[in-house]
Length: 408
Image 1 (cartoon, rainbow, N blue to C red):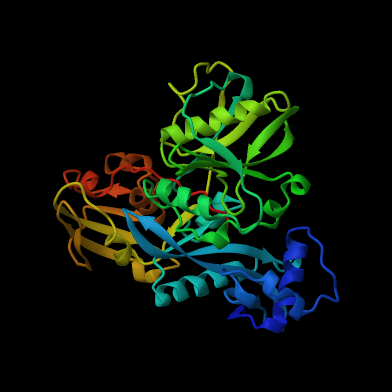
Image 2: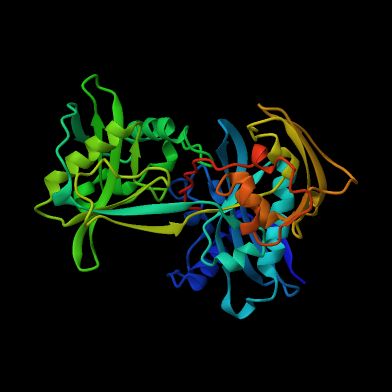
């Protein structure tokens, strides 16, 4: 039998060793709990071990661990409590014995009790974490742009480099203004951007530049390092916490950063940078023949509390739906839900005994809720059975701009 608990500070070396073994890292056997819990090793996410779960077997051996990191998500202009999952690790000789499932069962019940409505994680395997109710909802579109093809935009303003790990206020503000336009973006604070690499960029090869307009307003930034990729020297945009590394408040901000990158054309072949799914460079770049785009799935989402989540939606028209959901790890989400809404908000979401308009697993509901699928795309979702095709599915579920790029 597996037992799950929150660790105490003295268990930190055991947890560190499990991660080192599971992730093929390094660990000094004489590492102390005090050194691992030192202020410089802590953050707002995991202060002194808070939020770390451990799973032990009947013999008292700690076999697995998981981190539960509190965050807030933007949902239709509102801030919703969420929990990021990270550091899931199990000793090899104890894998496939159910320890991770028991940690998720424990963590999800605790999230519900604490009022955390959503959960997120970056899966090493989509199929593996889908078993626990996590589903893909967005992609990171990564663009590869030859620097020689970048135009010179006459936008005025100036560019400066940020030096010092605490000099992050411009990044926080630019991202705040940018991400208000996207659902499922994470509310960030200064600590999410602080990085020792920024303190000495010449030593770390980790540079951040900010563009300000003629009125002194910070409107765009890029953080990158130089590296080899596919036999070329490239500028690789990368953030301290998130996958993005690029922020802009408007299209001119993006144009200004692209124009600035031209100065590196003698040293690097291309810049590789991610952009939101709804942003395209068609019409921005004068030459697209050598521009390439790749896509990969980013952070996965889980609905922890279904009726609480529904309250955040903004319908496009008034109506009602009867939605039957199955959810093995969150039984409180199961059942038929009668959802009543006007053209501004969901008025109620209550269990009912009536015949549903549609039945689906929680995995199918998540992309509908997030807006990566619309109510007119039910046929593309596994496990969905439509009973009343005339129900107003697309009034409640429709596509939305999403930008979810955090690492957990």
